[in-house]
Image: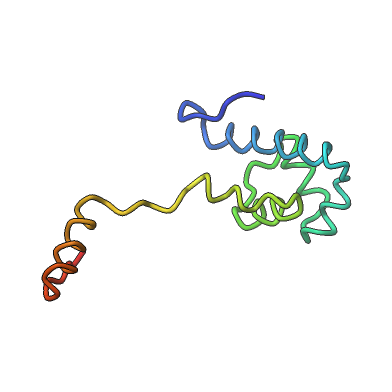
Length: 105
């Protein structure tokens, strides 16, 4: 498996994700037909995603595929919730201490 980094094109990243999905699916002893039935996607779509011929898969379809492998929670790692900035924390502390300061972002 190759690493996904900023040097790869969007097309290359989707191809790599398709390969990885196929490996996970096989390790879980699932067929493309079973994934199709559980996800509501066609076997043609799943096959194309896995072999790299369909790189136009939608995010919604990708999420449906992750759900079939019980991996949708991993989406949180792709774009984690943004932590509070030091500036926001500072203004919150001012508001808490003074009771009348309002921070507008």
